[in-house]
Amino acid sequence: MGSSSSRLNILETASKLFQVQGYHATGLNQIIKESGSPKGSIYYHFPEGKEQIALEAVEYTGKIVREQLNKTLTASADPVESLQSVVQHLVDHLGHPEDVEGVPIGLIALETCSMSEKLRKACSEAFTSWQRLFADKLIENGFKQDRARELGILLQCTLEGALTVSVTQDNSEPLRILKEQIPLIIKP
Amino acid sequence: MGSSSSRLNILETASKLFQVQGYHATGLNQIIKESGSPKGSIYYHFPEGKEQIALEAVEYTGKIVREQLNKTLTASADPVESLQSVVQHLVDHLGHPEDVEGVPIGLIALETCSMSEKLRKACSEAFTSWQRLFADKLIENGFKQDRARELGILLQCTLEGALTVSVTQDNSEPLRILKEQIPLIIKP
DNA sequence: GTCTATATAAAGATAGAC
DNA sequence: GTCTATCTTTATATAGAC
Image (tube, rainbow over the protein chains, first blue to last red):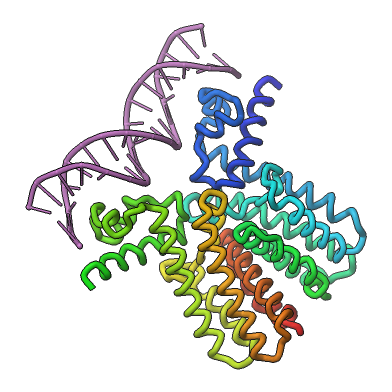
């Protein structure tokens, strides 16, 4: 261990800050301060600086969200019901972005995709992995592979959008409407 | 006129930059440089500084997108067909964010909603106005008012999300899938 | 109304003692 | 591995000549 504890601590703090505030609004100074680590440590653990931290933060958040999605999706056998649980979970955490599942990576994706190809790819891969989880759930329930893939992408996009609009409007209605319309969208 | 030309020029330049790069990545210096206006002018026309420019840029972009949506939505009587045209229009402009309809205001909305209540409200109102355009189109075509409102919100969220994911993945597939699924989503 | 020079704060990054 | 002091650049913002 040794370094691990301090490194992970920085990464967790950075991940939360990047999610809520975005890449450019989050300064190294703030990461230092909130993580409790000194500025010297940050460049020891992440020698390539801010971009490296962001890259690892995106991968880290991608994995956490993947695990959370997996848990929620397997809680019920019915795909409609489990997808509705995913949306409900977002509604429940709307005002509390201190949890890692707040506004995942849409913000940092839009901020950095035209600036760093590395970061764009990392965000893209996180999105793809979530899409695949939705698709797999549908395949398990008898959907054809191509149709499941299509719906997986559509679902992830719709979630991303409804979350963005709910946060912006400070209102859970967009997410609640999406939840109600899930049965309509999930059709073979 | 007099001031109008210079002022509008700054606003148009700022709107494009905010859309593509976001609020924090866009510096006043860059707005000055690309608009050709001198730094003195920017504080003459926008005495409250960057936040005022961003606020007016969001309102400006909201209006431009509203006008563009209106045009596309009235081109065909059929709501499914005209909504598909809206999506196709986004696909066509994916790689060219120099047009104002590139990645409208999702980025600046996420960046600023937890930082400035003024800006959050401006973004929220732009979203609402677009949702209303979709709803009105559906009401014209015999949808009940409540159902049309619901679908208007869902459509705007889905567009926002599919655009975000398409830009991030550098791939029009998410938007194209959405286009194909519009008939499935638009059900009374 | 236009433009330049400058003030001031904060960013990312580095050096080097411990 | 940890911490501090500091370098350099850039950001927003202002003052004041023209």
